[in-house]
Image (tube, rainbow, N blue to C red; front, side, top):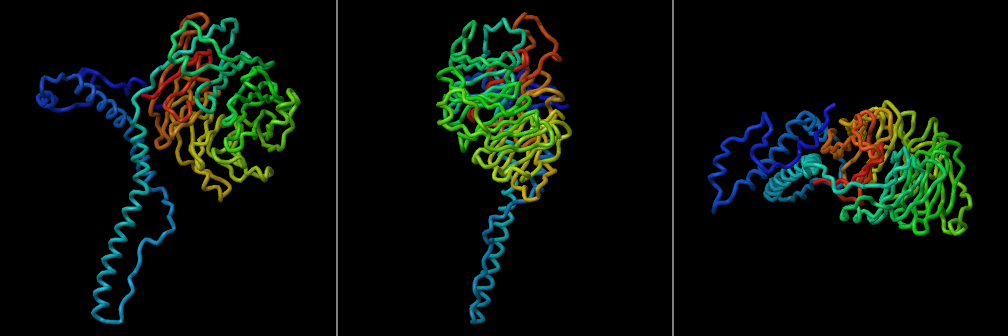
Length: 473
């Protein structure tokens, strides 16, 4: 596996940190051009940044080349507008010749514009992706979340979620607690222990949480006993419970387009749809009733609504497939995505028509749902490799084309949707937060990641409960 070292892309402040195998000729000539006694530190930083990006380009040249040709060969969708128009020819012979010549020139110009349009149609996305890929040099630690919960022997964080404004984030896991932290306080205040602003206890280990994108005080959770709950964060109490699943619920998701709609996926091989309306919520702790059920052929590991609709849903399954449903027809999927070799552990919508999936086959895959007319899609737009994931849930989150995921090497990896190789990575330290002793890499893995509201900042947690706020710089 071609893993990316997070130090590869760190900007250098000195010319001494040139990587071997790369040479900059006539560096003395640059120094001679410095005016008014300007120091060479600025030049060194500039050259260091240039070298780090050059190193990344050269290290992944073959993959960039493959992505270039793949983008070039990809069909371009027609705008549906005519590209050329023929001028009418006059009945006058001389006029006809002139107009015909003018028409030929116009047609030639139209063909050139057509060719330019075709070229820009595929090259622009490639260049835009390349700029995004090289926009950041490394992942920097903005803050370490220091918790005083030393009594729990297991602190595995299973899920992270930001509220609609990116002001608060919540954590949940096997310690049976939902903890809510104020993000800026964690970043700006250096404390020995960071206490949550809200803490809510569950009766069972928690597998997933999701903040309502419209109702700021509302957060949903799922647990290992198959119970789905909706909580009021301001009151620190559960509003309602849904108990129809027969086995552990792995994943839940609120619809962004319809904040009263909630979906859950379970080991019992079903996806449940729930309507969270205020009438039920005001009757605290009354069991909710599902409004729809999708029966799958295997365990359902993840569910996700599209960004712009509450009428469709995607979910990943232990049968290695992703299913995309129109919720007006729960009997058959609108489309099935086939390409993974093992369990699909997570799915996230990159935009309205593209979805990324994570699997324990060591890959992420990007799919184009506009091809759903064929009912089966067996060719992903992109396959991302570099991280290690063979048995655990390691998290998946997307923001502005950047895809964050964890690895069983205790690293966070950042991909951009345009390229199959990692853009950045960051390795957590291997210190046990309870004992303070060094642990082997095999004992730790990244368990969850979450971007902060379409920004360059994300929060990541690992299997020992170590939580860091990271930023792309």
